[in-house]
Amino acid sequence: DGGITQSPKYLFRKEGQNVTLSCEQNLNHDAMYWYRQDPGQGLRLIYYSQIVNDFQKGDIAEGYSVSREKKESFPLTVTSAQKNPTAFYLCASSPSTSGYEQYFGPGTRLTVT
Amino acid sequence: RKEVEQDPGPFNVPEGATVAFNCTYSNSASQSFFWYRQDCRKEPKLLMSVYSSGNEDGRFTAQLNRASQYISLLIRDSKLSDSATYLCVALMNSGYSTLTFGKGTMLLVSP
Image (tube, rainbow over all chains, first blue to last red; front, top):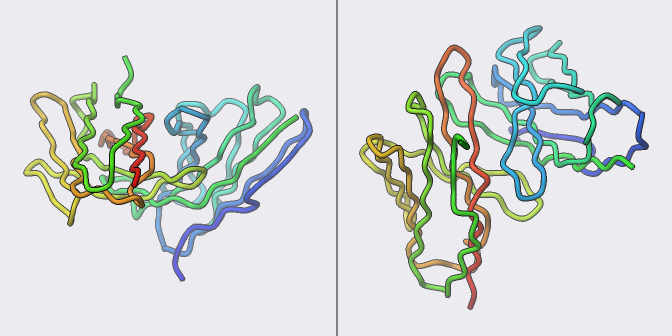
């Protein structure tokens, strides 16, 4: 089955710890994205990548980091510098960033206490 | 001003009703538009793209008015399974294209 997987589905961490969220796709898509969604809010873009070893900051990149060492994988690290890390994190991919719709993974709910 | 605005709802309708969602966007450079559906605590899923000429997919019809910067989604003969949040999305092509999401409109279809 082709698709996007994110793991884990639920993640709990203590404040001050870094945590890495996994995102893998086997759709052969070039572009990948990370969003966060807070209750009652729209999706906000954290980082995106068009090609391996290249990525750009989105609207709310502070406190996050990413890597794109393989086309299939785009992990997101939520660092201790992120002031309000508790959120629903969604990874997406698209064939390219030029006018194509995006397809989402099932998301990871991160709770930091 | 928010870039993509939607009425948050919820819209409460009985089964079989016709319901319309509206969306406005502020960036006239936006070039592509989509409607996504998001079930509670799930990921958004693409419902349909929106074309200038308007497009229909079964019970769903999407319209785009570029002059008014307005997008609509019409759902006919509502089903219980249509209950979800509907996200209006604009894509702006300027170098790297990114999607801008509205906050969504919640639809509740009751028996």
